[in-house]
Length: 388
Image (cartoon, rainbow, N blue to C red):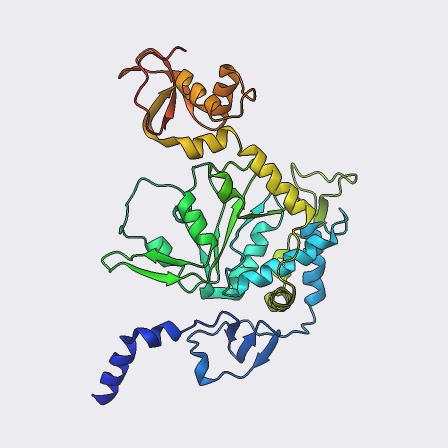
């Protein structure tokens, strides 16, 4: 009975619970503890308070390390496009992501279409981190109509204690601007499991979003500045030609890769490469953003400027909402610098490209007027006199 009482006291002791797996600078493995600051393995001690152990062994001199380095050169096109700094940066970024630190205050985006090894990289991270890797649903970052303050948020609660939270193939839906900024920083995250009390936890998790082109985000300009955009512009082609896959020898982005390589990459070697990146991050930080990353982020910000920013900052988006195209266009023009406007027709084309249905209204005050369906200007009532 005395043992039971002691264990019960510990389980209910919040101070003790907060010590468990709280060290951001280490990873527990079966044969010890990896200190990410020095990329060394040391014995486990009682004061570590680690209750997990990753099954991948740590060997800083793994014999297959050169294979991982060669593969990452292909993924980043560091040699083919003359951007060695991108390879170095990617190693520091992955290394930073496996620590429990979030002080860079970024949301990482892997961006690219087709066979570009985004998925392979995520599989390696998942294989190495095991329970510390969370394949997160889109609901953690996308606006939803469900819930409100204090509502159950199991998806957010599941981030607690994770090192990486990955969201695959983001949809063209409005992102939750507040949630985006919250996940990028190191502040406490409020969350509640179903039938449980509201709680908060300190975020140790780096969020990585996978995007295809084009990237439409519908978030504010200030939030866009928090993104770390990483181009995955390599196109992997099988050594044995397949239908629809043609190698263009003049295209530096086309690389022949053995389709069996995916299963042949050593996760232990990848672990060693990532830990070396963590050590570099502790010593150097992420460093300057490579030009290819800075250019991609600028491109995204340009694509999401103007109409995209107007939607994020001035509109409500949802099923059943509508606004006359004339009213919407006038409001959009009023938000832009004088003399820097587009025509009503171009505005309608752009709204259609972003997924909003343009059609005559058949009900309410806007009956028989051309409307943008799925959107309403915040604070506006239906404009009964809007011309079309």
